[in-house]
Amino acid sequence: MYTQDQNGTQVILAKANGKKEDIENPKNLLMVEKAVNPEKSHPFTRSKLLSSVLKKLQKYDDVKLGRCLVYTAGV
Image (cartoon, rainbow, N blue to C red; front, side, top):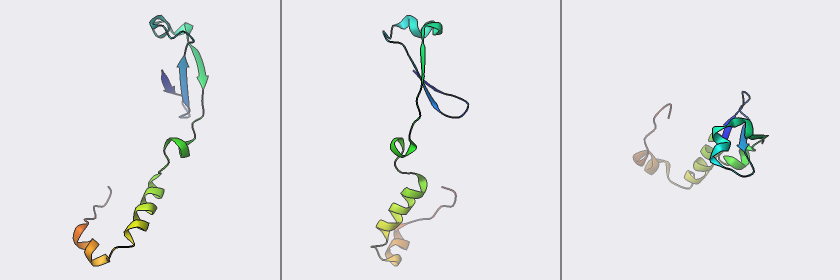
């Protein structure tokens, strides 16, 4: 069972034996805080993705791309 604290840090709720009673009775749970590296969990940030796509599109002719692609602001 996972949750997040007020700082957005992922908190894992777990119990060694994992029985149904452990979830229904939170006093038996062990809380472990685990920092998550966003580079590993989400390798393509918006800027990296955009950069990667633009780099791949550079090999195509601008006129042909203009006929195929539609730009929508805010998407």
